[in-house]
Length: 361
Image (cartoon, rainbow, N blue to C red; front, side):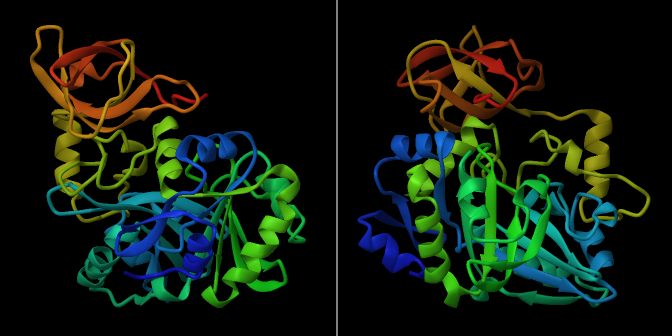
């Protein structure tokens, strides 16, 4: 298994380790619920160094990105970030990711860990215009510091005014005595905070500085288990569960990152234009259980007549709400908030209400 600059630290802290996307990653330390509530109420640190990072550079970089991404990169100003996805020829999602406009003619793509090789091959396949591409995944480390006390923790370690960095924006500069750290406000927990990108050799120095700065707030390391429950409480999609090569952005409620502007001849556009005109055959929705139970990936969603109308893609017991919550694809007529559906759990049909995300307000 691959390791991150923090693997030995995780093991030394007694983390429960498990393989994820080829990496030996921490799943939990003090427990998923405890770590989840630490992020919601204070501050927690995630090692997300397993994520992939690609550079797209040169005079053809923008043309390349307009070709392979669903969103309109031409409107992305320097210092800003954009959520987007790669779309295949059938309209399915190859991966969802974030693109940063780093410098003129230089962009950073941060992709999902499990899709690094697939995404890299996809980018090379569609780089017919000759943009300069670099897979920097093995040369970048990343920590996500999340929670309401994240900004107070991190402000001790940088002269950048973190309060002045808007959501989906970033700055680059010194942090904890390390130069050229990317400080990004693009969290996926709904609790506020920042991501830090840096060279792996500075990992321990930055880790130690963050935990010293956050000690007064009860800072804790957080594993992938709580990362999943946190994103689910916000109704955020996870690739491999809620998104994959067979789900389209329109079905997933990601029409807002799917732009059909004249300057956007992106892969899969024609299929998605037809789907938009015709209407989707299924739609991703969020639901809360009325009856006691926990929805899980793969469980059937049925109507009052016990007819299958869809499947659960993500589900858990919400640590904050203390009820079962989940997401799943259903026939479009059942996706409207307020609709009653049923989740089939061990041959019992548990009542659930379709709701508008996020679950955690």
